[in-house]
Length: 215
Ligand SMILES: NC(=O)C1=CN([C@@H]2O[C@H](COP(=O)(O)OP(=O)(O)OC[C@H]3O[C@@H](n4cnc5c(N)ncnc54)[C@H](O)[C@@H]3O)[C@@H](O)[C@H]2O)[C@H](O)CC1
Ligand SMILES: [K+]
Image 1 (cartoon, protein in one colour):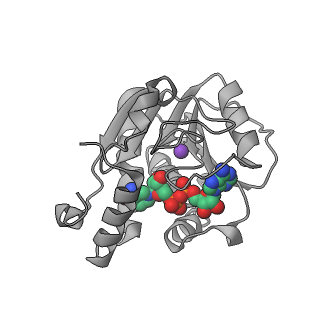
Image 2: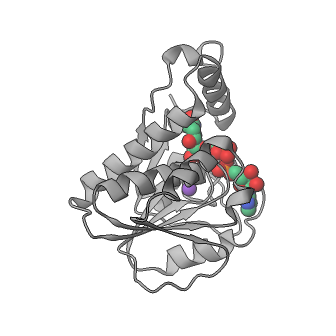
């Protein structure tokens, strides 16, 4: 059964209240996403992977992916679309601070979109279920960069710019090759398989009891 975005937030909050903290959900989300990506691409060792990270928890999932992909020997660059002090959540900030201790991952911040490498893979961790209204800068430029790039594109939870509840698109949106959403499928996402590419829903360890009273 596909669920609403509102139900997803309620389930997530219930799980957190049970002690299965959001940082654990985020860890499992990032790990599940990397598992799918590595299964698809085969060996990612030395592959140049650019990860766009927004300021919410969709970005946090991207930060977890960066750490896991570095573990597979990929050449990872994280581009945070803002400054670290403006990261919105504790769990995402916590993941950023781990990456700050990892010279194996290159960290970029701010609104410049010229790179000294051509990525083999781009991960879209810009916006997820928290999207509202028209997409603003610097997210617009990041989405343009993704759509103009000739490489494999992977979206975390939902292609950024696609509303996972309604299936409607914002002023600009990512067109991906693969999308991994978490816990259960959200109602709007499968309406736009032309934007998601291959689409999967992965469990992230949330206790089924967290659904009680919600589904
Ligand atoms: N489902 C789960 O159990 C889990 C999901 N996870 C991931 O978390 C995101 C949702 O995170 P949230 O912080 O609520 O929202 P976003 O990251 O999508 O966006 C937050 C942030 O973005 C800004 N914003 C909103 N709309 C726009 C816009 N049009 N232009 C520019 N900026 C915009 C706004 O400021 C918001 O605060 C979910 O998708 C999953 O990927 C967790 O990892 C835990 C498990
Ligand atoms: K996304």
